Length: 76
Ligand SMILES: [Zn+2]
Image 1 (cartoon, rainbow, N blue to C red):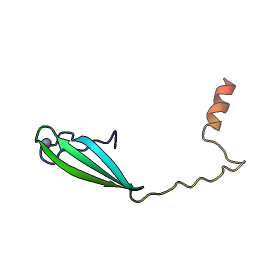
Image 2 (image 1 turned 60 degrees about the horizontal axis):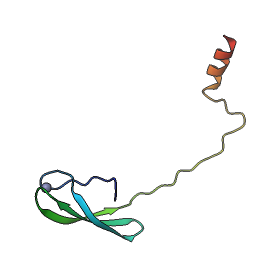
Image 3 (image 1 turned 180 degrees about the horizontal axis):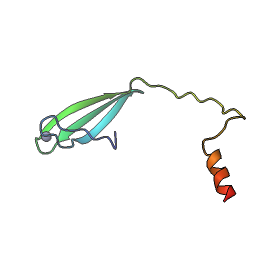
């Protein structure tokens, strides 16, 4: 969970992540601690609503948006 900021529910400061485990590919469980409140707990994070992007090939006749700009600059 490095790079993800988790805030203390009491004071709102960043929780220290003491350790984290990944019981499945889409679940991370972090043991967290707030130094200000001396509060410890567990944060569960789950990956949801995953979607793969779908790419399609560009047609050979496609007119690129930058084509006009290229022509204009060539004529100068
Ligand atoms: Zn706190």
